[in-house]
Image 1 (cartoon, rainbow, N blue to C red):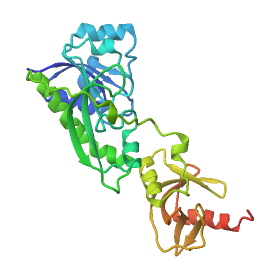
Image 2 (image 1 turned 60 degrees about the horizontal axis):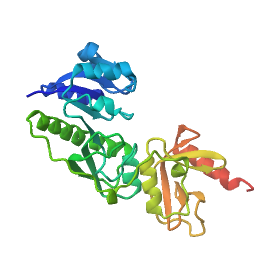
Image 3 (image 1 turned 90 degrees about the horizontal axis):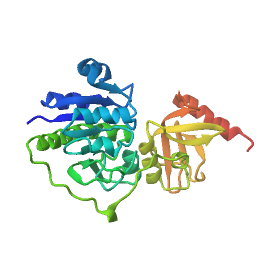
Length: 297
């Protein structure tokens, strides 16, 4: 039996759930620049709500009046009040791009790469008052390609996320919801948004850690360093060998036409950078490194 859904998040999931035969009684979207938003606004009409304040009593009453079977969240960016969740007969479910309870929080893709995880995945879980703490209903795992940056990992998780969200909703519609598995508190790790210090490249660290940091922060906000007083945002880098043995960690040089920086145990080539927030060519980066070498400091 199709479900009446109060949906919160990005348009694609709402459109797919309605395609599956469910009744999207409310389609609340959290961003004005989402892919598919224009189509979704036309499709859902008066059922659509763009960036509503879900804490307002009038909005909560709107959800209650709809008498939804279930609240579904797909990358809604704010905490849903439990008054909204409890308005639905089956409560609420959401998809989180990690293997809960690992990497609870707003930036699990950053922490999965930064931590050196070899796999991650998507967890569909019950919505509770605290973020990402609800019982897990379904999981799909994927291997993390060691070349992926954060954007590529996020894109790789989109299809699994939609797939298990739709299959979980379908299970509720059949009257056979998946078994709810409580999260093990001993396995919890947190995934807060990166701080400024998380974005700074400390060249006294080993090469593999620095390369993970670059990938985890690309393409935004980007890992950064400073050369000749200019902020250099590093969006792509790779291990390079050989390199001048006289270099010390943090020293930059142009070696065999490559722009390189010494690390604790090797060196990396800077492949893609921005200078003071603007995309830069290899020649511009090389000139900056040469100017740093010419500086009396």
